[in-house]
Image 1 (cartoon, each protein chain N blue to C red):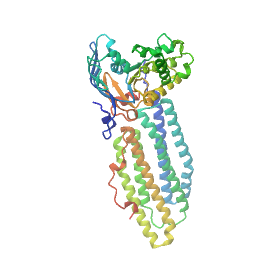
Image 2 (image 1 turned 180 degrees about the horizontal axis):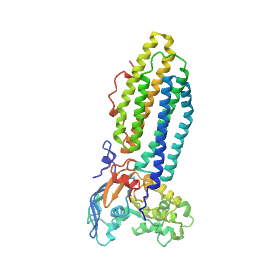
Image 3 (image 1 turned 90 degrees about the vertical axis):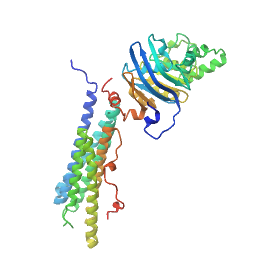
Image 4 (image 1 turned 120 degrees about the vertical axis):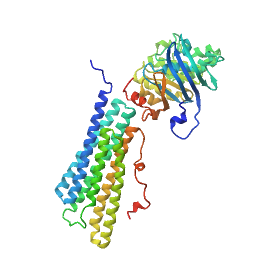
Length: 265
Length: 235
């Protein structure tokens, strides 16, 4: 069990844990993808999930808003508790879970509609009809995604007309429009150029003021730059979890050391 | 086709830095060795050659520092690679200081080359022998990634400190007996102090080797005898 206090190797400190994962197992058919994962994710921090392809990090991310429900043969056991609620209990409303746990994907995927409608989509889905209120949410969300100055004069233009980096920030605006607690990001900059990447990274640092961010990245320097905590997955196991500053300078586990120094993966 | 080693370029670059660091260690060790030899044999010419070496020691130190910066910019290292490259920058600075002490001792050797010594120089060369052994061990520990060799360095520093205390005590008695000995006595004491400081810098190198290998900051004091009260006063 990786508790924050243990990982810090310091005196026990109570951290504000938002997501508590216990005994989590995920199978895709006969394939055991995640094995007995225990992890505590701290509120208003950025947690990076790293590991070689096929290690289970994206599958883990998708467990946090039950995206794996869409995969035939996927079976999840164990608990993920967000704000005292086990998201895998029968009583969980999955639609409202995905409002509280937003997601941004590898490739920018704006809907084929206007910039405004992209961002208003979530709030409308959840019943928001008041135009003034919607305008306010759209503006705040686009500002929150550091895109406002670039699109404020063309909110009715198609979201598909934006550059890749702008599209990704639009997707972030769309994800935060429902005022979630958590924003999940699955390699959000892997399709972007260095400047667009730097803007998203800076945005992620700002987002943690209001949200808890969990990000999957193949770029370890990116994980080192933007995250507060890092979890290293290998072949479905959570090998090491702790403060990013420690993981990338002096990891405890030889496998983590070998991975971050490029000896495998 | 052979398998591609994704670390090949990185490993070659870091090996190159390591090689230069070991060369710097050998040059600094040579500077100290020649300076102590020049002092003992009152060889002003040898001492002069040590002073001339100092520029090449300094420039190699900056070359290593530059290589480390390039390495960081090029590879953005993490984990053991990051610990190694950051430590190499500190170690280059420590090693260059040894060269500075060699330089300083050489200047004293030149100043005293025509004077009759107030005592035979026995303990100062002994101090140097221990510092030299420490330096060799720490460079070998670095070269061979050996924690054990690095740890062996720490206890030797106690012997260096003991000799410094002994030298100070002896010089003080000599200076009390005859005030005309004060000028030379204080210069010889500075030589002993330089060697004691050299021992401290070599200890830093061994600590850095342990940090590279373990990721932990290990204090040399853990492997040394407990500090005696009032020892720093020298009596």
